[in-house]
Image (cartoon, rainbow, N blue to C red):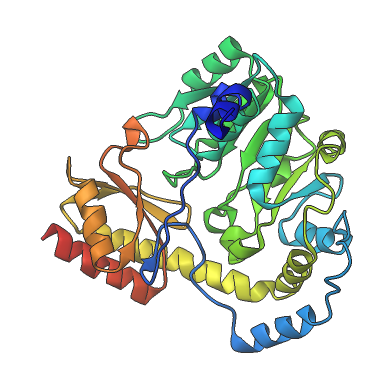
Length: 360
């Protein structure tokens, strides 16, 4: 039996029907496609970090509970004292753990869309049914659509990205509070972009038994560490910890994240700079008549190009050394859309120059 025949026999049909998550090679292009913090650490901080890494025992397994890291994470993210904390190899692993814990045949994962691509992908990989709630034309979340879907589908798991990716907007707070009051399942508020939004549900932990708040250090400038966090009632965290693979947070990530959080003022300064640059870039894009730019509370901006032009604009930017994210074709609501990460001022200007050359 050939490998192809063996695959057809044993790999689940829903897995064979998926496409792998594709990450393009940026080469030497200006990389404005992945919502990364564009700023490096100061050289003195890098040298101190390297000195620390020389002392990390690579021959030993990491602390399975990352105990020294949890407390600075609690402090930096204002996690309430009574909440439990679970760490993951990026937010993706936490999403997967949640789906594995509550999933099963006929159980539903519900989330607004267009939204984070990992929600439907992981739902299908873990055997759950995925239900996407269509956002309104301005990418708002309809209260009636949301609550009707919760009543009709009785989901086992709900994800709400706050702010939403790839649209950048914050959903109405009162609507989400009503969801927490109504839903009879875990509601995960995914706050990956919290440093740029200055809005959070973290302080509501303890008031809602079904509330879980997910964070990542990626957007703080630590994307290479792959460290995610889930906070919630200890009853949830205890069960999810049974699924977590041993030693999922490696020694280099633990040491580096703990070090970075001791220098949180550097990360906070970078975040403030990105927020200011986001508004400057937004205002500049508003002056371009060939596109619509949507307000954002994240570190990226969503653009809708003139009908039919997004693919050629994307290729034109690439040809001029600037890589953004092409969303056109990924969802009907994102027709003609591109997404640009807020970079350093000189990178943002290079993007604008390339854009003007393409759409002239």
